[in-house]
Image (cartoon, rainbow, N blue to C red; front, side, top):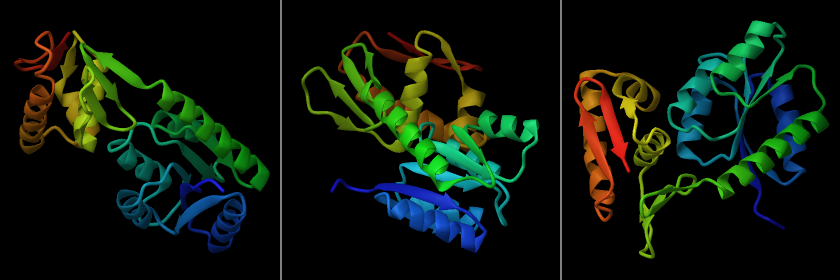
Length: 227
């Protein structure tokens, strides 16, 4: 049997949470069940879930706020929202903050499982094609590795990988300092800016085997990856 896929489930209704957990576990999923948003965020940071199922209305930290916090750390993990709210603006907000799917209560377990499998399959295809070429380097964003020609890959930290990803996606264009600080650090204050400068210096060193690549500082605006 293949290794079970780990799902983080945040649901504050005990009975519903257990039903979902037990149903998914019969389908070879490993489920980490949390009954509030704060606990779910801590569980996310200490585990490696491959998909999130988040109730919108939860104590301590609601599902939308939780998703926003997680999106500052991870752009790619699939997120499904569960909610009794059916107004259009709520659905729009869920997708706007980074949700991938939205399931209204009450729902059938079969429908949830189909949506989970569809997202996981889509993510798998995306990851297989998500090796970005930058100069003579191959950047594997999902695995957070950077490889120069045939040398052994360098392992990047989570924040290095996300910063490099945004630099590559905006190559030869200015990457706005304020926007990327808010996205990756959560704010654009002085200390976050200094931290970002440190990560830029680290990335410059890791890219220095290709003399045609440069990360330059555009004073007052941000950084530009020249390639």
